[in-house]
Image (tube, rainbow, N blue to C red):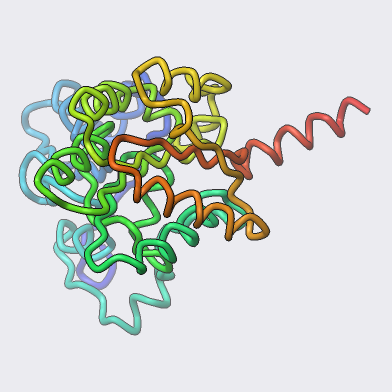
Amino acid sequence: MENGEPEASVLKITQYPLPEALVKQLVADGAEEVLVVEEGQPVVEEMIRGMVPSSVAVKGRLTGDLPRMGELTPDCVRLALGKEPLPVREKETVVANRPPALCQGCGHRDMYASLNEVAREYPQPRIFGDIGCYTLGALSPFHAIHACVEMGASITMAKGAADAGQHPAIAVIGDSTFTHSGMTGLLDCVNSKSNVVVLISDNLTTGMTGGQDSAGTGRLEQICCGLGVEPEHVRVVVPLPKNMEEIKQTLREEIDYAGPSVVIARRECIQTLKRHLKAAKAQK
C-alpha cells in the first residue's frame, strides 16, 4: 500500500497470440481485478476473460469502466483506476498536448494548401474526405474537410451533394482507398454525369498502414478512364509549392466542368521516400 492506494502490477501486451502464461501469472500473484486498457475494440479484454478464473473481475470497455467508444485519455484511465482527473496545468506536465498532424514535407500538405485557396473562391464549397493519413487535413492548420465517414464514402457523399445542387462538390481520397472502395463511387458519378471533382491524393503507397504497395500505382489514369471519365478530365499535378498556381488553375477548370472529373495529385510519401533513399545509399 502507498498513500492508502492498492498496488497495481502492469503487464504491457505487444504481441499476438496473447502471452497466456504471463496473463495467468499476473492473477496468480494475487490480483483481484484486471483493468484492460485497450485502444479500439475490446478484443484483448474478451480473450482475457477466458484465461482467468471467474473470481477475478476483468474490467475495461465491456464493463463501462472505460468508454466503449472513442480514444482513451489519461483522465478516463485515472477514473477507471478510482482516481480524480488531473488539473489542467498538472496534466500538461504529465502528457504533452500533441495533436496528430501531417508529416513535414508531405505532398498532402501542398495539395490541401492549393485546395483551400480555390475553395475560398466559392460561396459554399463542400469537401468530402476519406479514410487515410490525408484525413488529417480536417485538423489544424488546414481544416479542409467537412465530412468523413468511411472508406470510399467521399465520392458517394460528393455525388449525393452534387445531385442535390451543391456546387462545388469535391471528394478527397487517397490512391489506396480509391482502389479499395472508391472506384464504384466514381462509376456512379460517370453513369449519372454528376458534377463532382474527385481529387486523388496519390502518394504512391499505402501510407497509413506502413508503406505497402498501392494497388493502383501507375494505373490510376487508366482506371479512371476505364470507368468512363473523359480522358481530358483526368488531370495529373505534382503537389509542390512551385506548382501551386498550376494546381489551383487545374482545380478551377475541373470545378467549372459540368460532369465528373478527376485530379490526381501525385508525389511520393515523404516517409517511403526517406526509406528508398536510405536503401539506395546503403547499396553504394
